[in-house]
Length: 319
Image 1: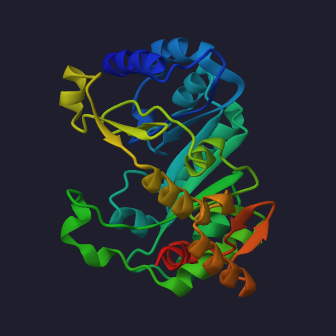
Image 2: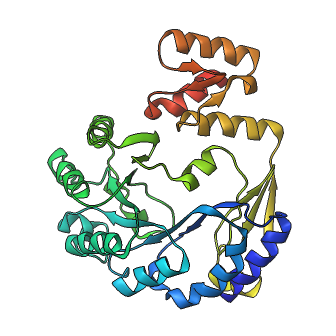
Image 3: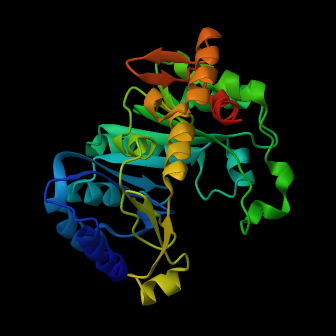
């Protein structure tokens, strides 16, 4: 936490942040709910003068470690949104995913957070897991919507290198028809999809900030920051990060890198893609997709109504 404080102090200067200019703060990257609120206090004291009055301040939390005391402590610091890593309300699926909590712990954690006073509550569900059925996912969705949430994230299980699932790639079994049905079912409950994995009656400002290509500070081991056309990567190892919290590797983005990223991000979200950044050839292809109702055009922005086709559309324009 001391290393994090040092890096944040440095980044505020590097990014030339003025008072009352930070729109969102997101505490994530694992299990913030295992860290006592008093350890966050110096960081909040450092950052609060830079936060806008209506800033969205989110913390991720695991149901088994987000105690009533922790939730109250974070609320007192200024956190106004909690995102719970629920993954499923099915006990067997939670065991398969190596989660430490039970379905009841997740239910209790959401209800406790609501009682504490958090108005913006989100939970994550994971799908595309071996053994998933439509019936299981239906029960997960029904349980989720019985709780006081206004946001839901649905992620397909992906197998990453150097994780426990690396040796069992067969665990990930996403099926397109399941995904389409899942997205439609979530939206039938009144939660609009505003990005490929996110739904809600409330749209997270922080999530949208990435899709809008805003600048962001990335603080902590393995974080990523971006300022204009430069990305910053601190150490990924916690031990190395503690030794050198100000060390970053830099990646310079070309104008074409930025343009392509804006296209991919825009079609995966409600942000859309400004027609002005497309080449003449891409505009011709976009007009074909518009005629076929794969895209729609409004006020200089191209919007994609089906985020599952986002990458195919972006690749078609650039091919």
